[in-house]
Image (cartoon, rainbow, N blue to C red):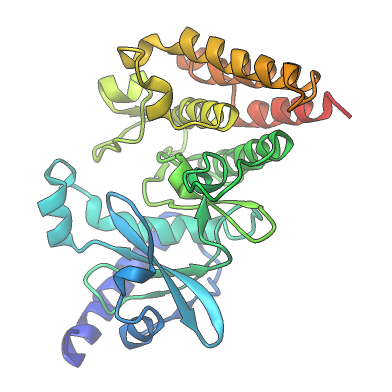
Length: 336
């Protein structure tokens, strides 16, 4: 652990950067989050015990913790040095990730489908974030049933999850003076609480669209974005999130990861018909076996079509996330 003088210096430096980010993001109201010391978090996580590690990403690690008789989730970002060593292609702008994460999360705290930030530690080279904690299970765990002991989530619950996450993204796009693009929509960034309510997390890659503009050039880059316009020119719009959500919806519908869906199909762009045909075949088999109701086939086909439209190569042909949310609600209500 760093000495007291160094910790105090980092606290001031990180606090200054966070304040600048909050002002830049328009978070003018006070933020009810707690300031944790590194000593408190080391105790809460047993010195970041590897056995308490429950999820890893390219830029951070998640740990289970316990503080003042309550469970917490601790998000530990890599240091600037670790960033440069592991991700040389992202050397520009990456140190800002935890500050962007906190600033946008503070703006989104009122939404029920957003993982709640309860505090942070600024005494480390990269801030450590502290969140509410219930089950610490991601969409990969609940929807894709990556753990053999988990049972896949029922179809009606999957549809509800898709609609609620779509609403959270739509809120991000429309609730503020400037649209905010999430930029990192994937199963590992969606958590569930004990009531199976999905919580969108990781706002570190968020990009605000400048006032009066409809797009922005991303100078950092996110390998989680598969949108053709982004890959080709780094152009980010609200429709970039729509494209990513289309793939997320496909995973929810199929109950399989994109990697599994792509397996054996050749090039990434050539498996659209393959996935549609095989998913429908699986559903028809389930109907014949009496595992699902025949009426659900219509919902699944409608969801597949919505996923296809969201993934259209032409951004102008994609719906807005508001329209996506409305369509998912309509699909939900199509069967009483």
